Length: 120
Image (tube, rainbow, N blue to C red; front, side):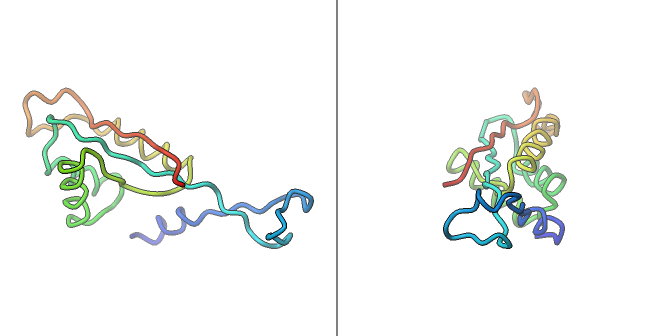
């Protein structure tokens, strides 16, 4: 995982009012933002090469990780590409939708489908 992705995944916000803190938090303790999964959905119109390329371009994933995601999407119908904050997850979902069609498959009409969902 790239250093800036690790930093983005660990984004924290501080509570601004001491009265809003829970009994387990102190005024100086950071509050983690809720986490969301970016889900890539399977379809018959995209190749493994397309998924590997998408993962490299959008998530800066190595070829091996791209292949793992392609295999998981193919076998289980979906794969988690990233777990992050809501804003970052929305950005990555939108980038997947804008990635374009698979040039290796003639019947392909556009990008793969992706969604975000809260974890927990």
